[in-house]
Image (cartoon, rainbow, N blue to C red; front, top):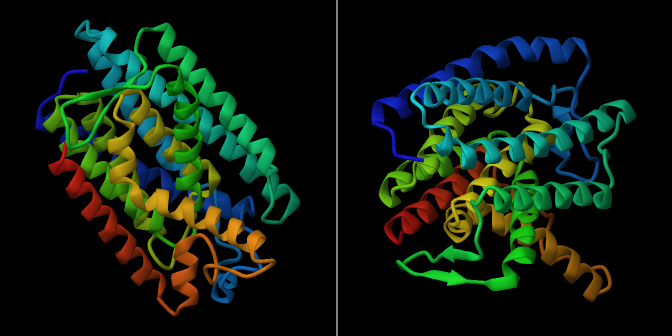
Length: 331
C-alpha cells in the first residue's frame, strides 16, 4: 500500500475520532439499559469494587467506527483502481474483527453468568490459535507471506525458514493476549495503544509502508475517541470485545508488514505486562505459593504499591512513548 498524503491520514483520523465519540455516546445508555455491567474480581485491588456496574463492551463503538471509515477508504481506493493494495489491510481488519468476536462471546458469557469468568483459558486460546492459523494460510495464499522478517536497527531481513510458522502463531496469540491483559486500569490500554498508533503513523512514512500509517490513523482516532469516556473514572470499559480487537489489529499488522519485531519493540509495555503474569505463575509454583509481584499483571502491582490509576497510566504511556521513539529512530 502506498503512503497517502498527510491530508488523507488526517481525515481518516478525524472521521474515526468523531464517529467513535458519537457511537460511544449512544452505546453507553443502551448498555446501561441492558445491564451489561462489568463484573469485578474480588481478588483484585479493593478500590476496583467501586467500578462494579460500569458498562462493558464499549469496544463495539470504536470497532464499528473504525470499520466504517476503513470501508469508506477502501471504496475510494477501489474507485481509483487500487484494489491490489487493499488485500493486506483487509486481512488485518478481518483478523481483528474475528478476534473481537471471540472477545464478544467471552464478554457475553460473563454477563450471562454475572461473574468475571467467560470462556475458559483453553477454549479462548484454541480459538485464538485457530484464527492465527487462518490468517497465516490466507496471507500465504494471496502471496503476502514469506518466512523472512525485517530486523530493527538494520536494513537486513532474517530468514526463519520453517521456524517462521510456530513463531508467527506465538507472536499473534501472544500480542492479542498481551493487550487483553493490559486492559485493567481506566484509560491504560486506550492510552498506550494511542501512543503506539502515533508511532505507526510516523513509522509507516519512515519505512515507506502505507499500511502502518493507515492503521495508525484509524487506531489513533478510535483510541482517543474511546478515551473521552474511558479516562478515570471510566464511564465504560471496552471489554474483551475491544481489547482482543485491538490486539488482533496490532498483531495482524506486524505479521502482514513482516515487521513483528518493530511492533513488539514499540509495544514493549504489553510484552512486559504479559511476562509479569507468566513470571508470577512460574514463581508461585516454584516456591510453593510465594509471589514475585504483589499482583499481576504488573499495573496491579503498582496499584498495590499505592500508585493511583492516573499515575500508572502516565507511567505506562510514557514508557510506550520512549520505546516507540527508540524503534522509530532504529527503523
